[in-house]
Length: 192
Image 1 (cartoon, helix red, strand yellow):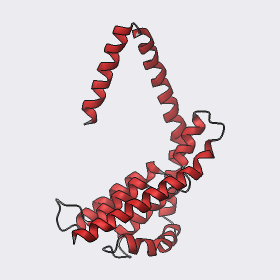
Image 2 (cartoon, helix red, strand yellow; image 1 turned 45 degrees about the vertical axis):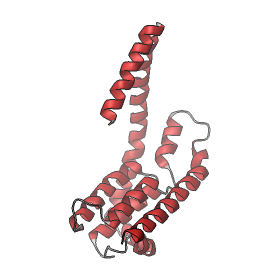
Image 3 (cartoon, one colour; image 1 turned 90 degrees about the horizontal axis):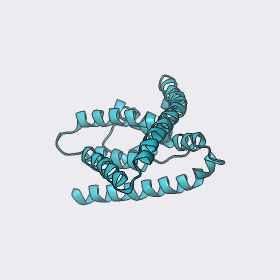
Image 4 (cartoon, helix red, strand yellow; image 1 turned 135 degrees about the vertical axis):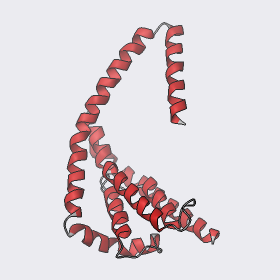
């Protein structure tokens, strides 16, 4: 869908710039925005590398096992179909931990890995299992205690208070997660 929407927006922008006589301004904005995008990517690269490295180190130590045990009551409620000692349980726990730390870039590959593992256990390969649906909702809501990526973006763009969004992020992500999980559990119950 986006491969249709974006070209349409680009074509409309060029047509509008031609008819309004602002083609030179459009051209200048293209080069300015690409330069800013590259600067933003470079500034985020350090943050992404740091937190991905921390997650890799944590994965190789006992920290993940301790955090997984800490999350066990929540995991039992959210994913009752998954055995606690399975690799899928650990993968989902790592995904949740990465999301809580605001590491969307680290959480995405962990979520994909967990989803692939859940698909292997899925009896009907054409339909999402209850655990898969719950994981999608949980990832979409993405409770964040430390929204590191957003803070890094705000910092790179010169915000005077890049951490000023922490409290609103807590409220938004917790509300989204609670409502999403409530309705997921409700639909799962109604579907049985």
